[in-house]
Image 1: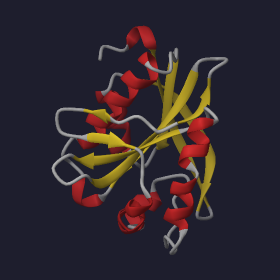
Image 2: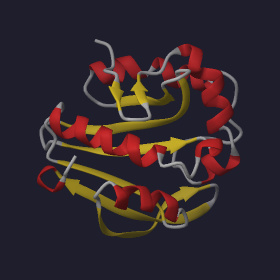
Image 3: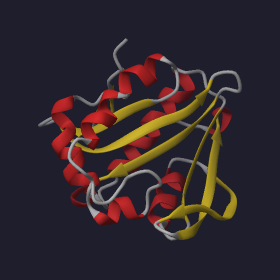
Image 4: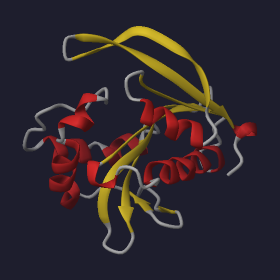
Length: 181
């Protein structure tokens, strides 16, 4: 079962392909990306992107995760990633996670992709709630969540251990009835 392709006025969200691996490694391998994400390592070793991409179809078919490459339609180049993960169809909720490569920061791509993925989650997956979190020291990620209509639900203190330092995280969420997309 292929991962669907979604579009926005400026972006194409599609399943990752093995040919995207070098671009993923290059962009996600930047220290600034890894530094404020939970699971991206630094350095980003050879083969990790391929291994990650190979999990996408099985995880999607199992109903656990849907990963989209955020692409510029003119060249189909992956500039980042956005996912719904921890999909729970019993309780009809999922967690959103994302990153965009440094050369593409400040252009609104992440907010545009996130709003489209919210619509997918609510309309196609019939979710009731979508939530996300970010490290407190990464307020730019919080601005993305605010722009797409998520509400700040709280701070969890020192809950993530990132590179030998405990980090606070900010939790955001949105209910289907609150979504205006």
